Image 1 (tube, rainbow, N blue to C red):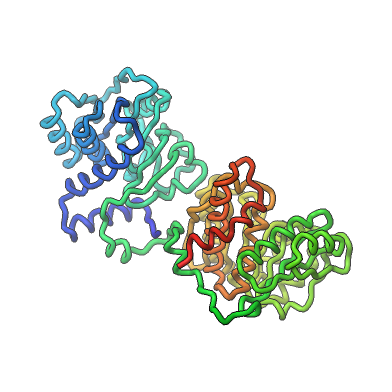
Image 2 (cartoon, rainbow, N blue to C red):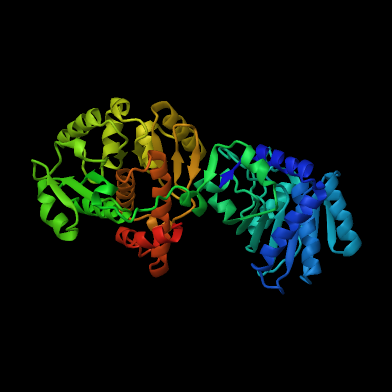
Length: 501
């Protein structure tokens, strides 16, 4: 799903108003109706509802919602906060509410007077929307601070008031801490950045009928991966095929004591569909690897305890290197030699990235469109410290462009930064993936996809989506606490079936 920055969203709203055509107040009615239907499924009908509306169009949405909830016979009180002027559509909806439900609304001008509420109340935040460009101050800040102090469930319309749609670095002002956020038509970039989780809570996108033509014709660097995006990438497997049809992956993984990294990445590559998988590891790992996954071809290094050299690269369709290899000087030399020989995209993870962070000149040897899979700390060791995840995202975009690489920045909503400037966020996965070996599984998945002939950008998108989807299936039988990396591998089949065309 393509999504947009807040200034573009405003333009898309206006395009829909002009071209559908639809009056702006009727588009507001459409938004309020979508929110109302969703909220009625989230709350008990006997719960008191307190709605806080601001002076702009977000406040207008809140007033529409209030009227609709009152028609649904809910116990609703409305508080309209402003400094003397309302937007045109907000004023029209104030008048409609007063006409249909006299006495339901309290006007607060330049002063916030807190109502008395019980802990079972629902508070709805409609103070400010995604168009806010300055910190909340004054009596609006008093309202936000009070909302956050109540201990009640808080539902935010479009975006929690005070949160900027994109960058919030260094913002030192009150922001509503929502339990749920109902975003209109598109997610906001801020929802996908970890420091904003405490404000956004659980979020859901509600369709309000922005014209599909406007969405398709408006350029954006942002994508949130959904099943439909993956279905357009996933290849059918021909009936008359054999193991050679689906490629041969080489995975260089595992120093002494780290055989598990080799097993997890190798098995994941097989479960992803690679026809053949060879694991090059230190010779001491032979028995455990071949006993654990007999389908893997084992290629021993000349040394018992570490990896020093890899040859015969031309027979492999894809190469991945890094899980558990360590950072010994001999292993660093192997990586330097390997990168000098490769002429196709590879996967670099874990200790391969750590070695490169010590020897930055290796960045120039990495083949174009190779996939680097750092977690945030590994990314910063490679490319420098960042003060926020927004800054890290911008740096990932620039790095991908400067070096012609694909950066897969792992975490919730894993970010894929492509060399063409596209920033793609993943929608699958859960906190159970924060476990040893989960990254090794992703490395194997990516190697397996490259071996089958997927282009590097396709492999990145399909790989992170399937990785997260498998973890979501694993969570059905496990908890976030109990999940281990093998559970993700064991659920890869279900993940592929769920997105099959």
